[in-house]
Image (cartoon, rainbow, N blue to C red; front, side):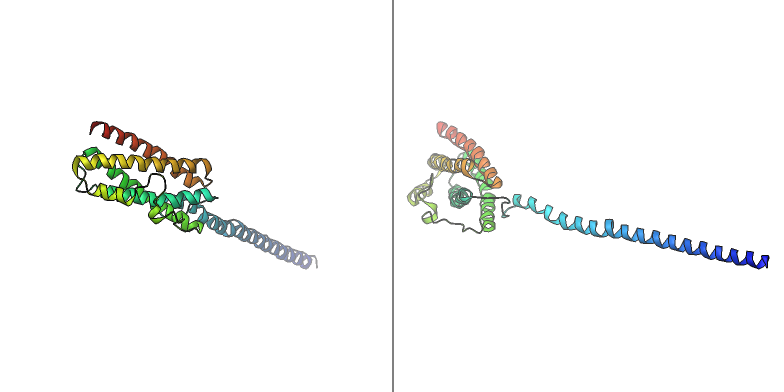
Length: 221
């Protein structure tokens, strides 16, 4: 009888131990699974969902991309006016091919073409992103804005070659750049969008330097 009782007790003890071990393993497995869901699943997907938008702010530096952040009417006006202003500068620069003689003039022409076409694409991208038209209706081709050449000015420039072209180009481009610098300074003072104001800073810096170079060219021609 005592032997039977001991065997029975031992049997229940073993069953109880096995049951406890199973429960412990199950609990551990549940903890691991929950941990996987809390840290691997949701946190990973959350990281992915937040990582994607974080790449977007780098977009505005690309050509034609919208300028991120708040903007105001001064920002819009700056882009709408500077686009045709830059386009005319490129038109003037295009006339230098086969006409310009001075190497410093040709060097400045190349710098203008290299800088202003990408800036035009940037500003068009801003206006599209802001839901604003590219033109604010400032006359035909923007004539009448500060520093803009008349159609007759452009015809007179196109009729010249060599030294005469270089002098006229320098005179007209100084006035043209002065107008761009004035518009850029207005954006510096009244604009709100950081990307547009940064471009205005670039215009003031680069075109003021080009004006100084053009004046030196005029002095020796």
